[in-house]
Amino acid sequence: MEKDLDDEALFRSAMQGVKPLEQNTYVPKRMSVKKKKQVLRDTRETEDALFFFSDGYEPLLNEEDKVRYLRAGEDSHLLKQLRRGDFSPEIFLDLHGVTKKQAKLELAALLLACERENFFCASIMTGYGTFTLKHQIPRWLVQHPRVRALHQAPKEWGGDAAILVLLDV
Image (cartoon, helix red, strand yellow):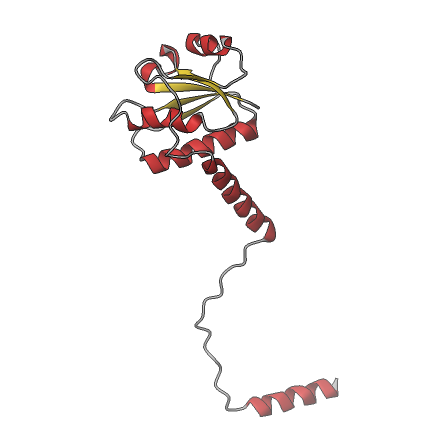
């Protein structure tokens, strides 16, 4: 006990006249390893999904008529079912007022959400506007390996301003 008091007294006498340093630097909070991995995983998944969407790819789509696509090897009856509204969309994406770049990111996020939640049918509202997205969205969708079929939506799911997409889950 005496030794502790002597050590303390010795320390105080040695520090007498020393001016304390001011802490004026910012020390950022550390991100947990779990959170870092989750952020990295989300970034990779988004980049992987965007990998499928090329702006230079021109599929053979009949753009004068209603938008429709059927992946090779799929039953042609799927298009008829989509057209009639036999499939109810489990998730909706509204792209009104977004740019082409934002639409690509939103579309990638939609496809990832469908994959995670095991949704097999989605509705994408493109709107009319300048028809940029209405023409571009099907071109992106046909490039994705999970898209089985797509068709212009029936009236109850958006009509001419929407596309129904059938996905592999």
